Image 1 (cartoon, rainbow, N blue to C red):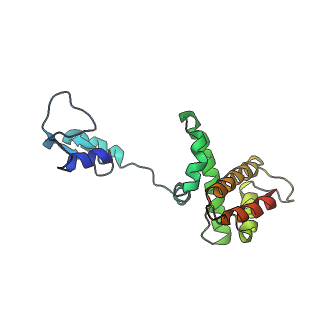
Image 2 (image 1 turned 180 degrees about the vertical axis):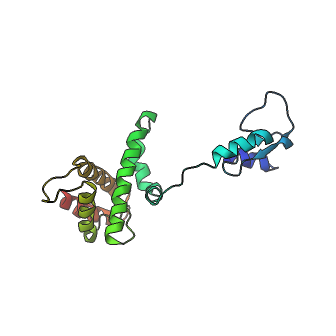
Image 3 (image 1 turned 30 degrees about the horizontal axis):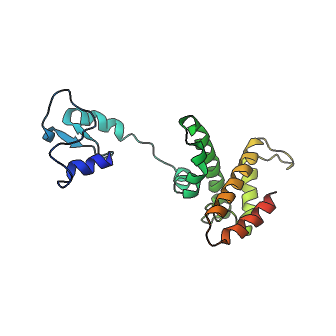
Length: 184
C-alpha cells in the first residue's frame, strides 16, 4: 500500500492513473478516491469510512512485543520456518524468548538484549529468569512447567550460534563460548 501511495501522489511517477485498493466495476474519476491515513491505501469516499473503522482497530503492542520485534537476530533465527504452516512455531519461539528478556529486565533492572545475555555477569539473572518462567518448585529440584526451561536452553544455544556466526570481530565468540559451557 505504501508503494501505491507514493505512485499515486508523485507526479513524476504517475502517468495519470491511480492504483486503488478496490477496483471499481465502472470507470470513475480519480478525484473520488482518498487515502487511508493508517495504511495509505486509496479508497472511494463511501468505502473509506468503513475501511478506516476496521483499519484503526490495530492491536496495541506491548513492551515485550516491541523488545522482540526490534531484534534482527530473531529474524535470522526464524528463517528456517518460512512456510506458512510454521508461523505458529515462529510466534511461540518469539514469545518464549521475549518472556525471557522481559523477566531478565525485571530481575536486573538493566537494558538487556540478546547480545548482553551472554555476559558472565548476567548468568545469575538468566538462571533466575529461567527458574521463574519454568515455575521451579519450592524445594528447587523440579519445575511445574519443565518444557519451558528446556525450550529456552535450546533456543538460547541457537541464538548463541547465530551471534558467533554473525560476529566479525570474534568478540562474541569468546563470550558465547563461556556462556554455553556454563549452561551445559
